[in-house]
Length: 219
Image (cartoon, rainbow, N blue to C red; front, side):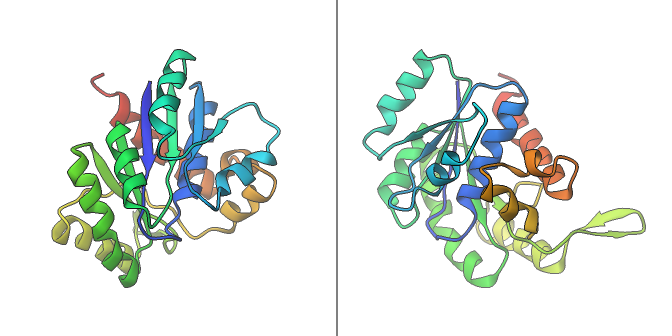
Protein backbone atom coordinates (compact mmCIF):
# COMPACT_ATOMS: atom_id res chain seq x y z
CA UNK A 1 0.00 0.00 0.00
CA UNK A 2 1.15 3.52 -0.83
CA UNK A 3 0.42 6.74 1.07
CA UNK A 4 0.19 10.25 -0.34
CA UNK A 5 0.00 13.09 2.18
CA UNK A 6 -1.28 16.44 0.93
CA UNK A 7 0.23 19.04 3.24
CA UNK A 8 0.15 22.82 3.56
CA UNK A 9 0.61 24.95 6.63
CA UNK A 10 -1.30 27.77 4.92
CA UNK A 11 -5.04 27.50 4.38
CA UNK A 12 -6.56 28.10 0.97
CA UNK A 13 -3.82 26.47 -1.07
CA UNK A 14 -6.03 23.73 -2.49
CA UNK A 15 -5.19 20.73 -0.30
CA UNK A 16 -8.64 19.22 -0.27
CA UNK A 17 -9.18 19.85 -3.99
CA UNK A 18 -5.97 17.98 -4.82
CA UNK A 19 -6.59 15.17 -2.32
CA UNK A 20 -10.13 14.31 -3.32
CA UNK A 21 -9.45 14.55 -7.06
CA UNK A 22 -6.45 12.26 -6.79
CA UNK A 23 -8.48 9.80 -4.75
CA UNK A 24 -11.23 9.68 -7.37
CA UNK A 25 -8.99 9.32 -10.41
CA UNK A 26 -6.89 6.65 -8.69
CA UNK A 27 -10.09 4.70 -8.09
CA UNK A 28 -11.07 5.15 -11.72
CA UNK A 29 -7.71 3.66 -12.67
CA UNK A 30 -8.37 0.52 -10.66
CA UNK A 31 -6.84 1.31 -7.27
CA UNK A 32 -8.68 0.55 -4.03
CA UNK A 33 -8.45 3.95 -2.38
CA UNK A 34 -9.31 5.62 0.92
CA UNK A 35 -9.36 9.38 1.44
CA UNK A 36 -8.37 10.29 5.00
CA UNK A 37 -9.86 13.56 6.27
CA UNK A 38 -7.38 14.86 8.83
CA UNK A 39 -8.46 18.48 8.25
CA UNK A 40 -9.92 19.39 11.64
CA UNK A 41 -12.26 21.20 12.24
CA UNK A 42 -13.42 21.91 8.65
CA UNK A 43 -13.62 18.29 7.43
CA UNK A 44 -14.37 19.56 3.92
CA UNK A 45 -13.52 16.20 2.35
CA UNK A 46 -16.08 14.48 4.56
CA UNK A 47 -18.73 17.05 3.61
CA UNK A 48 -17.98 16.44 -0.08
CA UNK A 49 -18.06 12.67 0.42
CA UNK A 50 -21.56 12.81 1.92
CA UNK A 51 -22.89 13.90 -1.47
CA UNK A 52 -21.24 11.08 -3.43
CA UNK A 53 -23.10 8.21 -5.06
CA UNK A 54 -19.97 6.20 -5.96
CA UNK A 55 -18.36 3.47 -3.85
CA UNK A 56 -14.85 4.95 -4.18
CA UNK A 57 -13.00 6.46 -2.51
CA UNK A 58 -13.67 5.20 0.97
CA UNK A 59 -13.65 8.02 3.53
CA UNK A 60 -12.19 8.00 7.03
CA UNK A 61 -11.92 10.87 9.52
CA UNK A 62 -8.77 10.71 11.60
CA UNK A 63 -6.97 12.76 14.20
CA UNK A 64 -3.19 12.87 14.25
CA UNK A 65 -3.22 10.21 16.98
CA UNK A 66 -5.49 7.96 14.89
CA UNK A 67 -3.29 7.91 11.79
CA UNK A 68 -0.87 5.03 12.61
CA UNK A 69 -3.71 2.65 13.56
CA UNK A 70 -5.72 3.70 10.51
CA UNK A 71 -2.76 2.99 8.23
CA UNK A 72 -2.35 -0.48 9.75
CA UNK A 73 -6.05 -1.20 9.30
CA UNK A 74 -5.95 -0.04 5.68
CA UNK A 75 -3.07 -2.42 4.98
CA UNK A 76 -4.96 -5.27 6.61
CA UNK A 77 -8.02 -4.46 4.48
CA UNK A 78 -5.99 -4.69 1.28
CA UNK A 79 -6.17 -1.07 0.18
CA UNK A 80 -3.81 0.06 -2.56
CA UNK A 81 -3.63 3.75 -1.71
CA UNK A 82 -4.29 6.15 1.15
CA UNK A 83 -4.51 9.87 0.45
CA UNK A 84 -4.33 12.04 3.57
CA UNK A 85 -5.85 15.53 3.52
CA UNK A 86 -4.12 17.28 6.41
CA UNK A 87 -5.04 20.26 8.55
CA UNK A 88 -3.37 23.68 8.02
CA UNK A 89 -1.74 25.60 10.87
CA UNK A 90 -0.88 22.36 12.67
CA UNK A 91 2.80 21.47 12.73
CA UNK A 92 2.32 18.20 14.60
CA UNK A 93 -0.32 16.89 12.17
CA UNK A 94 1.82 17.87 9.20
CA UNK A 95 4.85 16.11 10.66
CA UNK A 96 2.86 12.96 11.44
CA UNK A 97 1.34 12.78 7.94
CA UNK A 98 4.67 13.53 6.28
CA UNK A 99 6.46 10.74 8.15
CA UNK A 100 3.84 8.20 7.07
CA UNK A 101 3.92 9.20 3.41
CA UNK A 102 5.55 7.62 0.41
CA UNK A 103 4.99 10.94 -1.37
CA UNK A 104 4.09 14.41 -0.09
CA UNK A 105 2.29 16.95 -2.27
CA UNK A 106 2.33 20.60 -1.18
CA UNK A 107 -0.38 22.67 -2.93
CA UNK A 108 0.47 26.36 -3.29
CA UNK A 109 -0.99 29.26 -5.23
CA UNK A 110 1.55 31.15 -7.34
CA UNK A 111 1.04 34.52 -5.63
CA UNK A 112 3.79 36.24 -3.59
CA UNK A 113 2.12 35.80 -0.18
CA UNK A 114 1.58 32.09 -0.77
CA UNK A 115 5.17 31.66 -1.91
CA UNK A 116 6.40 33.50 1.17
CA UNK A 117 4.40 31.12 3.38
CA UNK A 118 5.23 27.83 1.64
CA UNK A 119 8.73 27.70 3.09
CA UNK A 120 7.43 26.52 6.47
CA UNK A 121 5.72 23.53 4.88
CA UNK A 122 8.76 22.71 2.75
CA UNK A 123 10.94 22.65 5.88
CA UNK A 124 8.56 20.21 7.59
CA UNK A 125 8.56 17.95 4.54
CA UNK A 126 12.33 18.12 4.08
CA UNK A 127 12.80 17.10 7.70
CA UNK A 128 10.65 13.99 7.13
CA UNK A 129 13.20 12.66 4.57
CA UNK A 130 10.32 11.62 2.30
CA UNK A 131 9.91 12.62 -1.38
CA UNK A 132 7.92 15.84 -1.78
CA UNK A 133 7.01 18.37 -4.45
CA UNK A 134 5.04 21.60 -4.65
CA UNK A 135 1.87 21.59 -6.76
CA UNK A 136 1.01 25.02 -8.17
CA UNK A 137 -2.74 25.46 -7.90
CA UNK A 138 -5.36 28.01 -9.01
CA UNK A 139 -3.04 29.16 -11.78
CA UNK A 140 -3.84 31.29 -14.85
CA UNK A 141 -4.62 29.36 -18.02
CA UNK A 142 -1.81 27.75 -20.00
CA UNK A 143 -1.54 29.35 -23.45
CA UNK A 144 -0.44 27.83 -26.74
CA UNK A 145 2.43 29.67 -28.45
CA UNK A 146 3.59 28.32 -31.81
CA UNK A 147 1.91 25.02 -31.04
CA UNK A 148 3.54 24.62 -27.62
CA UNK A 149 1.93 25.00 -24.21
CA UNK A 150 3.28 27.94 -22.21
CA UNK A 151 2.50 28.69 -18.58
CA UNK A 152 1.73 32.22 -17.44
CA UNK A 153 4.69 34.33 -16.30
CA UNK A 154 3.53 34.28 -12.66
CA UNK A 155 3.57 30.46 -12.70
CA UNK A 156 7.03 30.28 -14.26
CA UNK A 157 8.29 32.79 -11.69
CA UNK A 158 6.74 30.75 -8.87
CA UNK A 159 8.53 27.62 -10.08
CA UNK A 160 11.80 29.54 -10.09
CA UNK A 161 11.29 30.70 -6.49
CA UNK A 162 10.39 27.22 -5.27
CA UNK A 163 13.19 25.44 -7.12
CA UNK A 164 15.98 27.98 -6.62
CA UNK A 165 15.16 29.71 -3.32
CA UNK A 166 13.61 26.75 -1.49
CA UNK A 167 15.54 24.03 -3.36
CA UNK A 168 12.32 22.05 -3.77
CA UNK A 169 10.81 20.23 -6.73
CA UNK A 170 7.61 21.35 -8.40
CA UNK A 171 5.02 19.02 -9.89
CA UNK A 172 5.21 19.42 -13.69
CA UNK A 173 1.42 19.73 -14.00
CA UNK A 174 -0.25 22.90 -12.75
CA UNK A 175 -3.91 23.09 -11.70
CA UNK A 176 -5.70 25.98 -13.37
CA UNK A 177 -8.32 28.30 -11.88
CA UNK A 178 -11.30 26.63 -13.60
CA UNK A 179 -14.98 26.72 -12.65
CA UNK A 180 -15.30 22.97 -13.22
CA UNK A 181 -13.40 22.25 -9.99
CA UNK A 182 -16.05 24.07 -7.93
CA UNK A 183 -19.05 22.86 -9.93
CA UNK A 184 -17.99 19.23 -9.60
CA UNK A 185 -17.75 19.40 -5.81
CA UNK A 186 -21.37 20.57 -5.44
CA UNK A 187 -22.65 17.15 -6.42
CA UNK A 188 -19.99 15.13 -4.62
CA UNK A 189 -18.06 14.53 -7.82
CA UNK A 190 -14.58 15.12 -9.16
CA UNK A 191 -13.94 16.85 -12.48
CA UNK A 192 -13.15 13.51 -14.15
CA UNK A 193 -16.78 12.53 -13.40
CA UNK A 194 -18.47 15.91 -13.85
CA UNK A 195 -16.78 16.87 -17.10
CA UNK A 196 -14.65 13.87 -18.14
CA UNK A 197 -13.42 15.39 -21.40
CA UNK A 198 -12.84 18.90 -20.06
CA UNK A 199 -9.61 20.73 -19.41
CA UNK A 200 -9.77 20.23 -15.63
CA UNK A 201 -10.16 16.48 -16.08
CA UNK A 202 -7.13 16.49 -18.36
CA UNK A 203 -5.10 18.31 -15.69
CA UNK A 204 -6.11 15.81 -13.00
CA UNK A 205 -5.30 12.94 -15.32
CA UNK A 206 -1.81 14.33 -15.84
CA UNK A 207 -1.41 14.91 -12.10
CA UNK A 208 -2.31 11.27 -11.43
CA UNK A 209 0.13 10.06 -14.10
CA UNK A 210 2.91 11.98 -12.37
CA UNK A 211 1.84 10.79 -8.91
CA UNK A 212 1.59 7.17 -10.05
CA UNK A 213 5.06 7.40 -11.57
CA UNK A 214 6.49 8.79 -8.33
CA UNK A 215 4.83 6.07 -6.24
CA UNK A 216 5.31 2.98 -8.36
CA UNK A 217 8.19 3.39 -10.79
CA UNK A 218 10.94 1.06 -9.72
CA UNK A 219 8.86 -0.49 -6.94
